[in-house]
Image: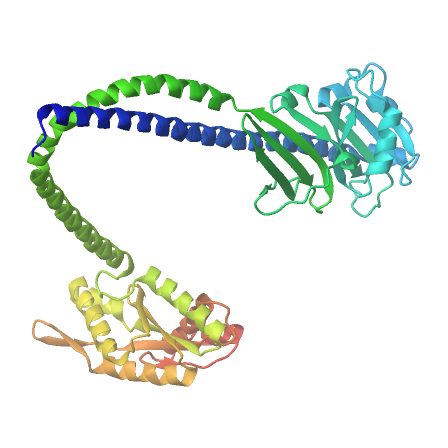
Length: 499
């Protein structure tokens, strides 16, 4: 029996109410999760900024310590040759440390006996003797950094060897600088710092920590604990020698998450009302969708077909552009750029596999005279005829390219010098028999060949230079010849000059 309209409406209203409640509950937990992810993402960004802030202070401290420790005046002072050093740099009334942002400095000899200690006028209540004891007990490496906790104030301490600008002189003491970490930097992240003696014995697993690194720290281990209202993190800093330096604890409350939950509850009230209206509109809109479904499908199919056509056209255009960029426009073989790229790759492969490789360089004889006599159109036909005569005698792996004008080159993989010379003779003979026509007149050309192999060369340019010198020798000895003698480069040039 068909359902009455009243029952249908009751079923629809019941379904709408249940669906609205389910959606509201789901949205609350879903968006709470989203806000929590955002909170964690912000906290991770703050972690990077906090590490950068600590690293920036370390960098400044190291920079100051390094500059002072390499001062020739200080080096002379440590060898009792410059007693005025202290007065000159740290006399009463001067603001050297204040201007550089330093809290204190220490100058110790090689046995770490304190020679001089000085503090900024802003640090009236710090105990230099206590700091010196910390330095003696903590610093064992020649160059390192650490953090000192003094009555709730935290100082970055850096140690550098005292050396002269003359690198041959040995160190004669140690220079220490101290820079206070500003409270606002720590308060921003609710950070507490503790020293190596106070470090917790925490064992990390791959799931419990992230690894960061900076120029001053080879490894920074960051462990995170996400509780209901807060994010707890521990930072453990290791220097470039993987020695533990110091650790930091931070605690950040979920601020955005708590605010987000309140907003979610408010918006859910709006959503409940809106969804009831939406369910009604869906019923009406469903008819409209059914009517337009087929029309939309046809439109999608049309757009898909157009997209495929466009992509195919782009692919064809890309292939054409690639051919234009790598092919000589006249002879349709490799241009200079393409020839060198392919030949260099082939050279490296042959070198790795310990295979033979040879190169033939060719120059058409008297080509300028042909151009001057018959014109450039005939010259172009000569170049085409030249390439056509060579192609039947070249293998698939041979690299044939036009270097410019009437100058060509062929790279022959897995071909020794004798085989390359024979191939050059075959090409020379083939070219002698080739002719082109200018009206009723037959025009033929010859070419000179220089053949070189990869042995004794470190790159394709060197082989090409050797082949070019041999080609020049072939030109000077009468043209229409193949030259493949192997001799040192200076001997080849000497013979060319004597011809």
